Image (tube, rainbow, N blue to C red; front, side, top):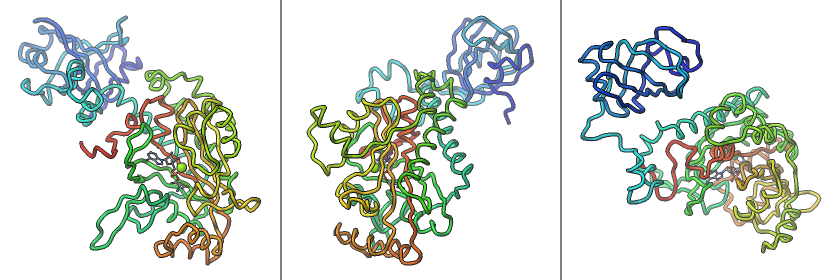
Length: 441
Ligand code: 4AD
Ligand code: MG
């Protein structure tokens, strides 16, 4: 096992000490007598100075001929330098663990990216399994891990119970157009679009529940914010209205931003993120405006929009220009949202729902609201939509036995990662992105 990391050396805690490091060759150059090997591990990169007269001929030759991404084990002394990393290792022993065959070198190089037939992006997606170990991707994966951790700690600290729902389901949650159909022993099943309906079944048991799980949407168009398989953090809470649910969503997003400031400031900065901006997301209140006001704002900017239309990305993007923090849009027209959204008792044309839009053009990161919770209302909503009742019998039953006001939301974890990391495209944030054109590697 490995007990020391490059990060320990870089932190200064191993100054002048004997160290034993294991990693991969990031760069290597030198002469017949001395090699400067930049070693990489999961915590950073560090220059290791390998001298022929220190390590012996056989070991020197082995290291000198090892190609980029060969794995390496070294022993030596950590010495301060005024060069790039602050420290370097004067190597006393070096051994190649897993070599790279010279006839098949590591494919990701500047020139390969420039010359790739399908362009750099497709080339890197084809080599995703190798691209993961390059700096930008590794940084994204660390930020992503902190975002997942923040979501778990947020809900657990508030006594939410983690709860799992099936991924094979019989009906849509978010409309039929993005349902993935799968053959299921002579019948049709679908991959779930959301944990929500099965979470509502457990709401009378647990009252406060959450999950982080994949959701599936057959999104045909490829955009910078849609995946066909994305990670969905969802919560459901009993005895709560639309405002209560928004309070939780707002507190969660602030908590994620705050966690990144504590755990990943260097990573954020290395991606070009200004920490002051993230601090603003962590500390501000998020404004709440109604759909109708959003429509007015759009019209005043010359955007053509009809009342009742859902707001697509192009419209959200224009709206986000007015805000420098996330903001909620509430009270969408009933016709724009699925049946489970509760109608506003004050005006039945609207539903008690919300979307949270991230600023800087990122748009929707949360969708949620209050649920239609009485039996008569849910039957009417299902019938009005022309949706068959059959797949939803279990869902209707929940309302037949002690229905209570309740609500919840879903947060797109990959979208939140993209926004907080300042990524141009959602696929930068997930190890193996899935879209309509790609299931490999
Ligand atoms: O707004 P959506 O469709 O809401 C629901 O699924 C509700 N049933 C959630 C709930 O109330 N429990 O999706 C919720 C969020 C969106 O705001 C977005 O951030 C993300 O999920 N999302 C996607 N992320 C990546 N790729 C996609 N194709 C996504 N579709 C939705
Ligand atoms: Mg939505």
